[in-house]
Amino acid sequence: MTKIILVRHGHVEGISPERFRGRADLALTPEGRRQAEATARRIEASWTPTALYASPLSRSLTTAEAIGRPFGLAPTPLPGLMDIDYGEWQGLTADEVGHKWPEALDTWQHAPHWAAIPGGESLQDVLTPRGRGAARGDRAASERYGRAGRARQRHRIILLHALELPLSRYRRLGQDPCAINEIDFTAGELTVRSVNGTYHLRGLSSKEQR
Image 1 (spheres, rainbow, N blue to C red):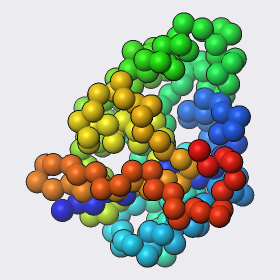
Image 2 (tube, one colour; image 1 turned 180 degrees about the horizontal axis):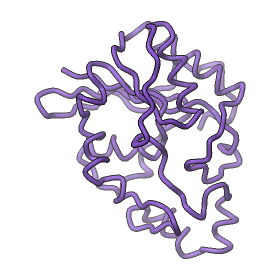
Image 3 (cartoon, rainbow, N blue to C red; image 1 turned 45 degrees about the horizontal axis):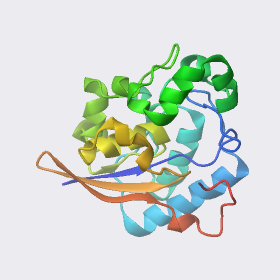
């Protein structure tokens, strides 16, 4: 059995008020670093990772480094784990996007599986063969326990794929900063054990934890 622990990165600027952060290389805030350390303690108490992979963005690597430290593991950066490319929307608020692309924003908010982001990726783009490989728990990328410091959007897509749910359910899955998701991969089958676990952050986060 392969166990995959998906962990979203800690808090960064641009979560509240929310911006389309995408592939902007944002550092963890002090709150985000506290979240990463708390997540590391939670994982150390429950699992023994043997491999660790993260997006090459600094917010993800810093989160993964905190998780790997108790085990003497350094994260391997994988570009395929990066956040969705928001193209021309990157760095903008929803109001700013709505002013220039009102119809595209409305589609993103109400039918994200049909949305076409100018100059960026769609949700369908993530389900290319490379994206599906990640969602299926590719053993080369998660050998026994693995994966930390990924992005909310890709987490949601992986979880939808594991649950055999359509992309139209994209907004039905919460993914808070440093949330933990647990997936088992056995004989070609995925079993989702937990989603958006944040109990380990109790008492750390402010109103940002949403």
